[in-house]
Image 1 (cartoon, rainbow, N blue to C red):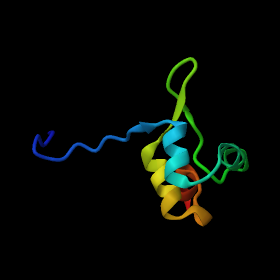
Image 2: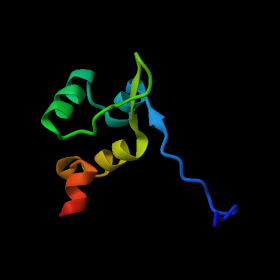
Image 3: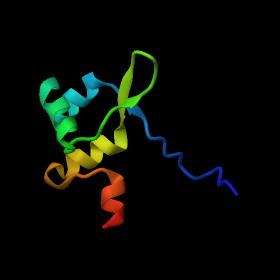
Length: 76
Protein backbone atom coordinates (compact mmCIF):
# COMPACT_ATOMS: atom_id res chain seq x y z
CA UNK A 1 0.00 0.00 0.00
CA UNK A 2 1.20 3.50 -0.78
CA UNK A 3 2.26 5.67 2.12
CA UNK A 4 0.84 9.11 1.38
CA UNK A 5 3.26 10.70 3.85
CA UNK A 6 6.37 9.26 2.21
CA UNK A 7 8.35 11.71 0.05
CA UNK A 8 7.90 11.17 -3.67
CA UNK A 9 11.17 10.36 -5.41
CA UNK A 10 10.92 11.42 -9.01
CA UNK A 11 13.76 10.87 -11.39
CA UNK A 12 13.66 14.08 -13.38
CA UNK A 13 14.75 14.29 -16.97
CA UNK A 14 17.37 16.99 -17.49
CA UNK A 15 18.38 18.49 -20.80
CA UNK A 16 21.84 19.03 -22.29
CA UNK A 17 22.20 22.61 -21.02
CA UNK A 18 21.72 21.41 -17.44
CA UNK A 19 24.09 18.46 -17.92
CA UNK A 20 26.76 20.80 -19.29
CA UNK A 21 26.38 23.15 -16.31
CA UNK A 22 26.36 20.36 -13.72
CA UNK A 23 29.32 18.39 -15.09
CA UNK A 24 31.55 21.15 -16.42
CA UNK A 25 32.16 19.06 -19.54
CA UNK A 26 31.83 20.29 -23.11
CA UNK A 27 29.15 19.01 -25.45
CA UNK A 28 31.67 17.10 -27.55
CA UNK A 29 33.23 15.50 -24.46
CA UNK A 30 29.84 14.32 -23.22
CA UNK A 31 29.02 12.68 -26.55
CA UNK A 32 32.49 11.13 -26.79
CA UNK A 33 32.12 9.69 -23.29
CA UNK A 34 28.68 8.31 -24.18
CA UNK A 35 30.23 6.55 -27.19
CA UNK A 36 33.00 5.17 -24.94
CA UNK A 37 30.45 3.97 -22.38
CA UNK A 38 31.83 6.20 -19.62
CA UNK A 39 28.88 8.61 -19.36
CA UNK A 40 25.15 7.94 -19.03
CA UNK A 41 23.40 7.73 -22.41
CA UNK A 42 20.50 9.99 -23.30
CA UNK A 43 16.92 8.86 -23.35
CA UNK A 44 14.47 9.85 -26.04
CA UNK A 45 11.72 12.12 -24.68
CA UNK A 46 10.13 13.16 -27.97
CA UNK A 47 10.69 12.90 -31.70
CA UNK A 48 13.29 15.67 -31.64
CA UNK A 49 14.24 15.76 -27.98
CA UNK A 50 16.35 13.80 -25.57
CA UNK A 51 17.57 14.14 -22.03
CA UNK A 52 19.22 12.30 -19.18
CA UNK A 53 17.88 10.77 -16.01
CA UNK A 54 19.05 13.12 -13.28
CA UNK A 55 19.94 10.18 -11.03
CA UNK A 56 22.31 8.77 -13.67
CA UNK A 57 24.08 12.12 -14.04
CA UNK A 58 24.28 12.45 -10.24
CA UNK A 59 25.89 8.99 -10.00
CA UNK A 60 28.43 10.03 -12.64
CA UNK A 61 29.20 13.30 -10.83
CA UNK A 62 29.71 11.42 -7.55
CA UNK A 63 32.29 9.05 -9.06
CA UNK A 64 33.15 9.71 -12.72
CA UNK A 65 36.19 7.42 -12.83
CA UNK A 66 34.28 4.28 -11.92
CA UNK A 67 30.84 5.06 -13.41
CA UNK A 68 29.31 2.20 -15.32
CA UNK A 69 25.75 1.68 -16.56
CA UNK A 70 23.45 0.30 -13.84
CA UNK A 71 23.00 -3.09 -15.47
CA UNK A 72 26.77 -3.72 -15.44
CA UNK A 73 27.35 -2.57 -11.87
CA UNK A 74 24.28 -4.47 -10.58
CA UNK A 75 25.67 -7.75 -11.92
CA UNK A 76 28.95 -7.32 -10.04
